[in-house]
Image (cartoon, rainbow, N blue to C red; front, side):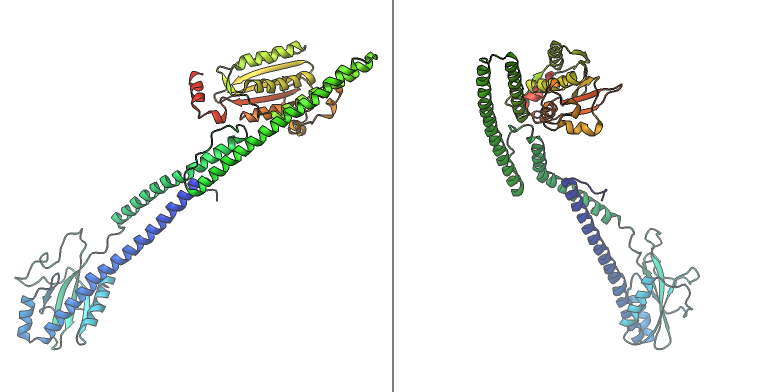
Length: 474
């Protein structure tokens, strides 16, 4: 579902809060039901038992004793009288009164005709000397909402006993205090759940961040192996994996260095031997092939090492770097126009970035008729270096494929263009090792635009004290 949070933290907190809310609502419903049952028992069953006992006592007594029982026995909040006639039923009594009447009939010792009526203003007042309504339990305060009823019983000798009684007010709706208590409990449970879940999931976030930066920095500090057992085990496994990868890459680097040495020695020997050839044309052709082989070996080794060199990140002057690359290209006869400038240094591996930008500009020089525009676009979080040429460009469907190793367009495979098809692959590998990237797009007016963007700081360097001090000085 789209409304559900996607993070582990959000989902666990959401599930916990929903479970607490449902549990509290069920508990609140049970409490309200129990309160209603208790109220019915206290105000209904007990009142019915007291009134039934009073009616039984009056019915079994003689006429003289009845007067004494009525005047001396208290039955609050009811008031008894033997002087009122049997009345006709009028207004339908409320459910509480009907339940009271049913319980009353069950508690009588013998069948007696009993009815219950709602008191109305036309009922005669109580006899002189009787307790006033408030003392008898008939509170006129509208906030208490007491509902007055009359219970009439036809005794065995035909006399009519009338009891004026006050039903208790209905339970307050809604139960504000209970709802406030539930809301407070839910808030406390939600806060505690959020705190505990955040404490448990923070190591997972650290693990995800470390995994994201592993490809560009195998030398990042190992993860703390703390937290829950499962998280600590995952962190320990990640640390072992990082060590194994670093060891494998170091082994590969040693193997690459050995291959480079072993391949270049025979090339050097061949160069020495072709000096004895008398045919000048043959000697130059062989030497040209050897140069191309040496360049192919160098480019291949550079591609394999891209992003994994031993160079350490440092502050580099982007403007000076751009000017240096432009001068190198001008020395080759290329017309390079530079625009824009960076306002602050960049934390990166200087030699690698120079190689990356140099490959892009050299590509533009080879296929762009010797005219290149190099633009620096400075932004808050990153720097963009834009290389534009006026060449034939690259079809959109082929652009992403051009970053694959040894891929060249059919029209550019002639020997006079040079290159091995690794320039763009090396440039992208270096850019991505810094947390950036290289993209190709069409240039307005024809040609190709290569955009190299780099973050102000390497992702793995942002939290280090050195990087923080660099950012403050920049």
